[in-house]
Image 1 (cartoon, rainbow, N blue to C red):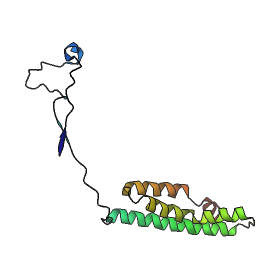
Image 2: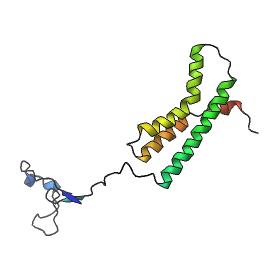
Image 3: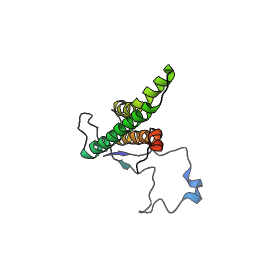
Image 4: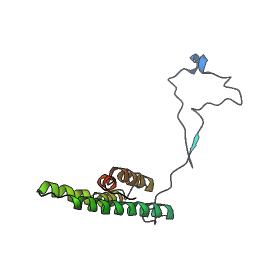
Amino acid sequence: MTTAASPPDGSVDHEDDEALQWGDADDATHVDAAHNPVAVRERAARDDDAPLGSGPLIGFGVLGGLYLLYTVAWLISASVLAVGDVASEIMRALAITAPALWFVATLWLGQRSRNRTKFVWLLVGAVVLVPWPFILTRSFG
């Protein structure tokens, strides 16, 4: 632990601040925050080579499985559409590969990020990339 303290400010006249005084400065219980050091805990250095713990590993695995299901659902939904122009084919390919691309990009671009940050971005992708055409056109009952 290190200590950090703010230096006393000589340009401020504290005698004029009667409304901000709560006692005698000579009193033993008087505390002046400008002169008292505050303990500051230093952050431990992160080891980038350390393996994932079981919690993040299971969380990323579950979300990876969800993204795989999303990819399959988009593949099934896009295969039903009969479209012929090039732009539509490109959009179809992007729709099918979007969940897998989001998952890989999040893990690749977030290599130096915390697991919590990567997990939040994967949850955002899980909400954004829901295969609505598959859900709305399929009957499961």
